[in-house]
Length: 538
Figure 1 (cartoon, one colour):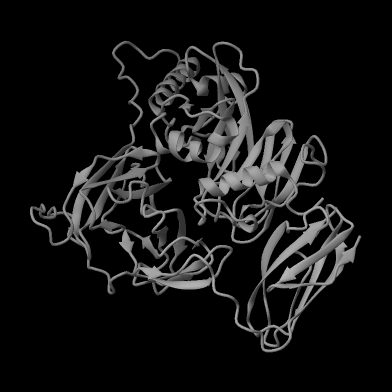
Figure 2: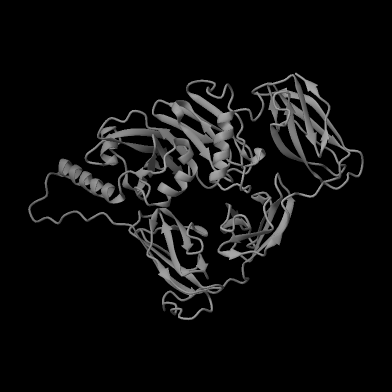
């Protein structure tokens, strides 16, 4: 079986890339849309208990036992990485072997759901049992996770609609309030009807979703359980005794902070969160309603935290943050230099402006499957900052792909392998709320420069693969340091089934035998830099 022969993998990977906004507006290119195939046929795995595969930077998925599926959006991993979904007695072990960043999604088929029951997703995380916010899309329960371990699907009786009560009946009586994620997300939350449906709406054919119970319901049940246990252990308190203190309610407040290089800083205040926890905060405005910068705050012993210089905006008029799944109030102000701007509050005092004004630059990068890649440079940002970058072109002026760049100790960063465009003529990016210069290029990449010598492309039969053998590809006589596009072909796919890039060394040579493989035949060959190799039979 050829490296990309699985129809289900091609469909799912293409849709995942589409949900992540591939640089091509009409059709996702084959190289970035393919996920490494699972061993066996398209509808089976090596065993009923385990599915293994490779996830790629382009976006991939692995469908495991019972239809439990791991979806890895584009940009989550930086290189092809092994992953698996394994069935266990108490759930499913979902794991990515290497480093990854951001979030993944897990789909769990609900199956037959008895009347008056609802599904609940329990995450056996390192910090304890975690009730994950999840939404129902069609016949699936979907969660967006920032860590992976063992997950379990429970079906709870209603009324009352209370997942914690269900967990207590299933033996999780010592479940701690601090171990619960913030929020039972509502259907209007971006997770419920935005990111989730963008990624998995195609999987179920559904256009609507709904979520489980709210945080207020969880708090109320937790309070009742604590009171019940206290009465069992100590007896009912005497008449007139003070009632137990009410559970705190998480609050996120935003105020306009001090003057910034553009507009004003965001003055963020958190209260009522669990003490000693890390809360993720996303800064948003009218120009970037999906968020333009994300950072974290650690709460103190009182469950409070504050920041007044972590992000700022000169766009508008609307500004707000989302922290721990909760949205703040909205605050309006005009752009820097505009009229009618309210003065900054007297406390806290405005922070010192950064030593350099952040600059976002774009240049035409190397050739891509369509057009050219975006070469993005950041300078003058805060050291170690995670900056959200969105790629734009004339065909998609609202942006077609978003990713994150992390600055170094000097506040700089560079990449040219995240997005590309064959549309035009205009191309630009927005990073941290700032727009880059605009660069023009045509849709078609120019022909490669003539080689210094006569290029030679050779193919040999490589080591065994999950199906057939790998392609051992050798290049010689090419220009030194050249990026050469290679396409793998066989008798079943004479037009090519997988494309990748090889970079020559100082002598114009290159070799690889780990990019593509085929179990079809009998004929196998490659094309590199417009030249066809010898044909090999297996």
